[in-house]
Length: 127
Image (tube, rainbow, N blue to C red; front, side, top):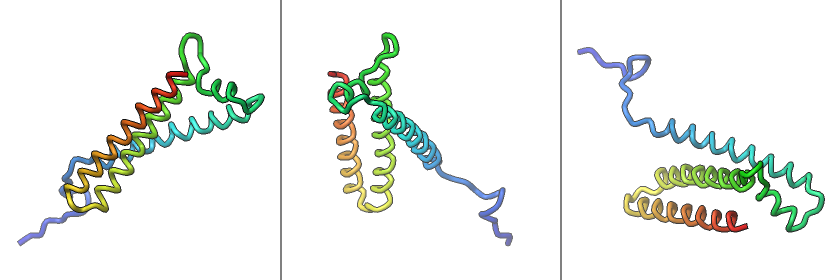
């Protein structure tokens, strides 16, 4: 009886490959956050004085009629929330074995992240 080889180029590959999509998404969100952080650091270093008006100007500058500062900050925060979701979800999936507890933790994580995004948007877009 011939044994099937489960390695090499003819191996049977199964699964939905969610890990690849999550890996790529986490890398893209990390790049977005790194670039925004560098831009923010440069903006802070170029401030004439460290006052409320200067700090507010970092997040409310416009490129013509477009509120570019607020849009970039919002993009950063969405990237942060998505990045956090992928990481925390993977922690729950790897280390919490009871399905009910894991589901509860995932739901609580989603609620916390959504509430954080809504709170952030409320603060940023009310300036």
